[in-house]
Image 1: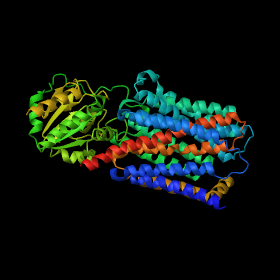
Image 2: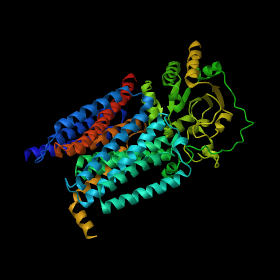
Image 3: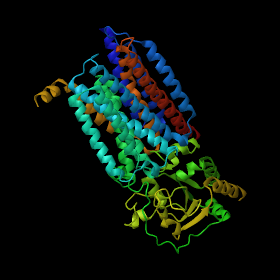
Image 4: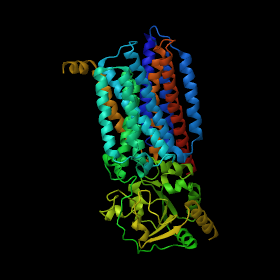
Length: 464
Length: 105
């Protein structure tokens, strides 16, 4: 009895550690402790499960420990090696594995049930089928998201004509199959249902792409959480339930935030609005000419200004220009220039991605301003330097109701005194929309590769 | 309907737990600042690896010669463990970078 008490106490400690760990994530100072605390909670829960007294069981510890060593090693090595630019891919693939794990558990339990090895209640079967569905969608959806982020597949190659109609039909068929399986239960039907769920996961992510990636990753994250919580119900295990729900909540909140940052409804994102097909914005800029700035001029302007705001976009990360950006920051700071970074919520390929990339380049986090703070600071900024960002600084979002991004909250860089855009060419951005900012009276272009241009700017500033 | 009433009455504590955890989760997580959203996501990922507990329970209850269940369970453990260890390790790696800044400043 006392032993049972300690096991249950361990689960309780584990669950509290999860919640408290997430709570500590509310500030960068305590975040690392929070993560370690959550990890400790997980370790306690796993050990308790190993020791949990069970009547007449074979235990099979060798299988468990073997699996843990293999999985732990793979996870550890991946975590140590992954590049920070590849974080979205890694989170996607790990997410998928969590979903897959839930699917395997559900199918194993259903197998035991239908072959008569153990008996599940009607509710239990329903929950197992739900786990199968949501875990399956999270698994194949995440794998496709991974492939898209790695550049292994392109949106156009995985999207069929009338894809949205296909998706709706597939969803209806899958749900119908799930209900049929629930009523007429058999192992074969469960497997058919699993295959349909896996298929739907792939199909549902297929039309979503490009700038919508942060939404997809967040949504799949919440699915994995739900599948873990549902699996917790199968085993009547509280810590699985608590852990799963926390992840589900986190994924849901991030999904909502990302949708808000683009001023689009979740449904609109799922249907694949402008992610793949570039809508034609107003094409009246044919005769407008963007002004160019020379390196020397740009360097002088920056060096003798009071305040500089850098707006990094994914182009900065692609060019691996974070370090040289920080170098320029240091040079300017040494001359008394106040340098800040304005980070749009959807800069990068997952929520908060740009912050991590800049943190890796040793930029102190108090310098990273979010959308709201940046917009109020921009009014008193001398020069804005836009590196590899485009749609998040597009004034059309404010004043052109015909634009596909109209209404999306953007960084109001035109409130600053001067703007310099570092860009490879005049090509439109990720969403395929022309940006009137380039022809703005305050704006000057500095053409070239982001890293290359910044490197040259650093050189010029040094020679001043 | 009768069966639903019975289910509700007999699982009351579970339903409380479910609802309170949802409320608590939203409360706690909405306090996480934008700067930390990526570590939040990878940390949450690690926590979703809690499904490994189900896999451990599955294997422990399996017969020693039930190789199908044992293989499926071990496969699930490998997947879950990648999630747990990889998730916490990479989150720690990220947060360490955020921390270093503080001292430098």
